[in-house]
Structure formats: C-alpha cells, structure tokens
Image (cartoon, rainbow, N blue to C red; front, side, top):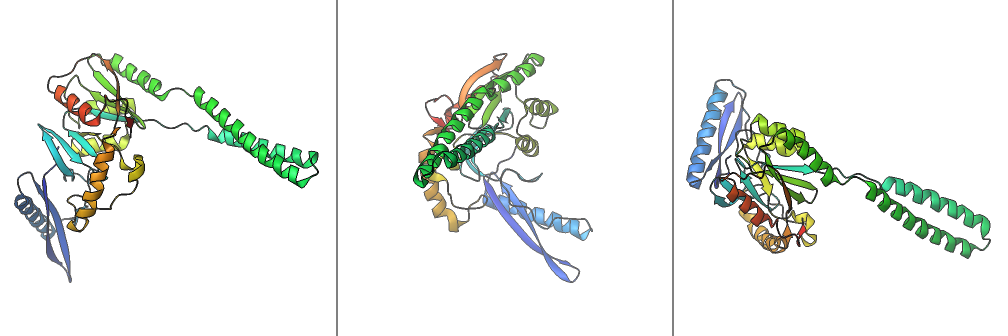
Length: 326
C-alpha cells in the first residue's frame, strides 16, 4: 500500500518520425515535492528510453484517485497516519481508512422490488372503478368526483399491499449472517465484526493480519459476495479500505459539491473546495458511516489489529447508534 503525501508531474517531448509527441509521467514521495518531481523526471526518462528502443509505451498516465492502474499509488489527500494505517480524503470528500493488513469487506444488499405488483393492482382497480362510475352516475360532476375518489382509494390499497409484500421479504441481514455462519464453520479460527452500512454490511476480520493480494482473501470475498469492484481494487492497490464519514449526497444540504478533479487540488478551485469542505465536515459529524452489530466467530482480536478496530469504530462513530448512517 502506498499513499504519498506529495505528487508531481514531468513532461518531455519526443520526436516520433515527422511529429513531436509529449510524454507525461507522475512522481510521488512522502518526503517532499522536489523528491516527487525527481521521480517523475526519472520515469519520463525511462519511458523515452523505451520509446527509442521501439517498445510500445503509453504517452501519459490517467490521473485517477483510488481506482488507478497498476503501478500508480492511491492519489488522495493524506489526513493522518497511524502506524501503517492511513486516513485519506477520497474524491468526493469523505474520510477513508486505508490498511495493508486489516481485512475489511463490504456486502451490498440487492433491493427486491415489490412496487410493480402494487402498481398493477392500482391501475386495474382505478380503471375498473372509473368504468363503474361511468355506468352508475349520469351527472358529469359525480362521475369526476368518483374517479378522483377511486384513484385515491386504490392508490392507498396498493401502497398497503406493497408494504405487506415487503414485510414478507426475507431480512437481508439474516440471510447474510447465514452465509457468514457457513463460512465460519469451515474456518473456526476466523472472527468477524459486523457493521450495518447504508446499503448492506461491513465486515472486519480481527483474528489475524491479511495480505490483500492473497488467495485466502479472494476466496473470502467470493464466498460472502463482496463488492467485486472493491475486491479488485484491494488487489490493485494492495490495500483494504473503509469509508469513515458520510457520502455527501446522503446529506440533504450537500448534494452538490465543487468539481475539483483529482488530488492535489488546482489552486483555482481551492477556495470553493475549502468552503464546501468546512460545511461537509460540520454536517458529516452528525452521521455515522456504519453501526456495529455484533461479532461472529472465534472472538479473537489480534494484538496488532486492536488499535485498528478502535480507530475505525471511533472515527466512523460505529457505536453511536443514535446517529443516522449515511
């Protein structure tokens, strides 16, 4: 896992036949901007050498944050370092915990739709009652009043039926726990902390440290049905990750935010970003990113992971169940 404090970009032109092309490369460092620039210049020189030898070389690297290509670190603002764990700010402003050893996994629940059945009931009933009104009432005003009443009444009935159908759906948390229980019976040393997230569950394994690129981790992701994008990024960045603060679009007053691109921020956007960020931090403090539910498994907490558990639970406000999760 690598999340540098400093970034720089170097460019150099190269004569390719009758035209000039520009080669761009990023550099990074935890020490200084100058070190980052020196690295960028060295990487440009390497790319130019490869071009001169006839190799196929990408002229520029995509400027991306967490979902970057192989070989380029996570490009986010570093807010704090706690040993090997790093707190960073992602592209939409939320704080994130990055760890090379603490296995986090997200399970997203698939919403089961029941509204289509209720809608058909509503439409059929409204049409039927409207036809009845046409035959029963001769007065146009009474017909209109009956149609309005029919629409209102059948809509209420459809909504009640929809709620009834939803109440019959299996609890996704219970279903997920059943799948987790099957895994834990096959792996009795494992211990998992379960957290309720806005769209599912967050799991944190505490019995041992893990390598994000190991087959053991990938097998676990596959068994629990972890978010495939997250699983792929863990492998690419050699890093586990958990969001600590609310997604801004889940906070009513913060649905719009400045478009600042990727870190580091262009000075042109800095003032607008700082203004928005101050309000985001104020409002996000009134939300939790998840709620702690329970622990399943052996109950073991590895001594090296105990501080990570505490850090995550404190910064995500996981134990403040009176707060809404967002």
